[in-house]
Length: 359
Image 1 (tube, rainbow, N blue to C red):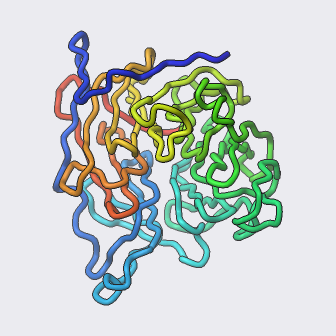
Image 2 (cartoon, rainbow, N blue to C red):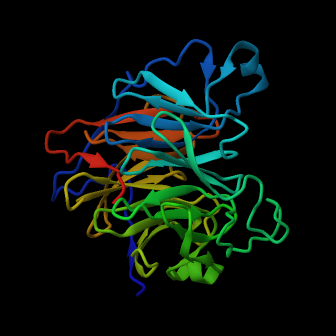
């Protein structure tokens, strides 16, 4: 099946008056100041647990000038709903290089990947390393290095994995092995390899919207309540939807980038959903245009958007990843020179609360 929903007419705020659309405003009071002396580098991921703790993963790449007056914040930082730091952990020599993405499982363990490494890791809620898949620095490439040709095939090795989605019914792990390889690799809860799908797309396949191939980064993977996996084919300017076996279901195309594909920067970076059982709304973080799109989940049509490029409150500078808590607050973490996490709160009473919890 090769169904494509093209998302056109995206001029902001793009509100369809036929239905009430969620509206969000930035919360300038969140988070609270970090502990004295701490400063973060690029924030490669943000995620929320079942108790509305918010975690960011910090790449610890502050500048030399910043290091003269401050200290590197820990790799993994947990906030409470009020924005206070309540926990932090991570050995910089042990966590994945260039942390990318985070997610919680049903037991509130946290999973992290790294877009310059060959591992994913599982940590307990209090920061103990419980499991690692892959070997640090041993890539699924022609020569085992990060500069080798991707093999896209190993049952034991990864190549720059970007995120993990957990099937809470089985504990199976769906890894977007996507900055070196171009696949979704599936493991059971013990780390045993089960299956995979995906490969590098040709330019012609990207333009045509062929399912199961990826233009460049397989940037993230998230479960919906429908049991489908929503995979951000970033430079293909689309979210590809699959069932758990890897059967392609449909495209949700975010064609607000280049006229032809692949799009060097890409538009489809991260996905979240509203918490009503049907997940009426779908949220797509568009890192090219520095906005969050609010979509009608069923039709895939953009209903509204918020954010803009910039450095001010509510703007994004390389908006990179997104999470949503049980109260409907949306969190966006920024890399490059943004290096912050911001919270956006629903302000209309009819707003359906939102979440990116795993199926």
